[in-house]
Image 1 (cartoon, rainbow, N blue to C red):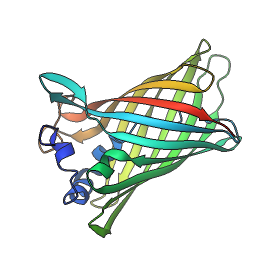
Image 2: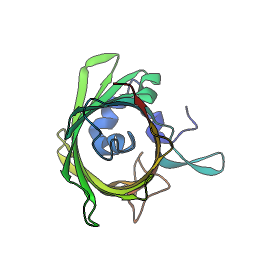
Image 3: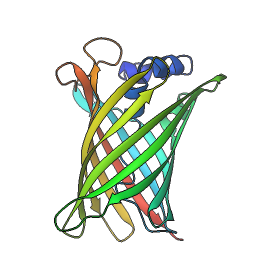
Length: 229
């Protein structure tokens, strides 16, 4: 694991809680693509995969950090979609991490105006060797999405996170596209400027995608597959 960006090296079981305490927003912002972009139909469910993270130098190239999530999206009500993800990369590093959330439509796309969707999430992190060292991080995101043709969804928005331990506010804008591959599956590509309001000129979270010594760019890929009712 020493070939990875320090962000990944420091997610070992002995220091993940320290890392989360020092820069929770960076860790949480690196946790996956925006899902769902829009609410899904009541009673339907989707399996979801997300892979990606901050851009890092690796083998002479610049690649996204391989942070993997597996999740489930469920249309609980007509305008309420529930989500849950297990953070596989963290599990491989002997840490427990998962998130739960709920999304709702604020405004439906109409007359050339985009659809607005809001989502609230709770992220849970814990060192499996110290279950008393649990950290919980709330995050709220809002995105505007526009359907181009029948199969391409363009969207942009922002995530806002409040860190309770050493209280701070972090802001992460994002933009992406969702491409329908079939009636049941879709591919997603998303670019984030993670923790855009935080100085990243120094420290273990400094990466290759910093803009004006603030935040770090991250590239994410997502895939959803519709399950039977």
